[in-house]
Length: 240
Image (cartoon, rainbow, N blue to C red):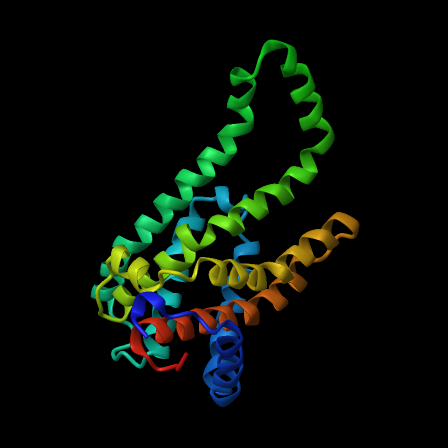
């Protein structure tokens, strides 16, 4: 089977990721603990994302995940700043793709009235007022549908650069070709718990600390899944 025709065995990857976490419980627990500290510390920043200190927090958090992937793939030294700098190229491209799509989606509801016939503008405005909350779910669905293009497949290039391999996006897209819907399903799996918390927050006020206690291990597990997917496409460590 050629690389371009390899189909990601998602259930197998999810199971293998659980096995990895069980077999490496000490190291995984350490990553979960550090990740939890990062997430909890972000809650202490006055103003949240608007605080200039958040950029410092984000930079250190970025180094943490670089360390995680170098540790997972046993690339010593685990903390290698030259590779971290190299990884900024694909990560910048990922951020650019995400920002472009986010800007398009954010601007579309504002621009649309200028494209509609005058007699439809009032109806459109009333529609937005009535269904504004529901539009969040529509946006989430759209983001899930484009996530293979702006996140999961480009992320493979980022992992490559972190562990000292080629970080070209075209290589990542070529290796993962034909797996669009599998990555969409992966995105759904990853986002289920976050959707549940979003729904609960609309009904009851879920403490943020509780959310972080759930998110910390899940984020580590999800990154193990991504690492396993990378192994499948790039290292042939998992059979189809």
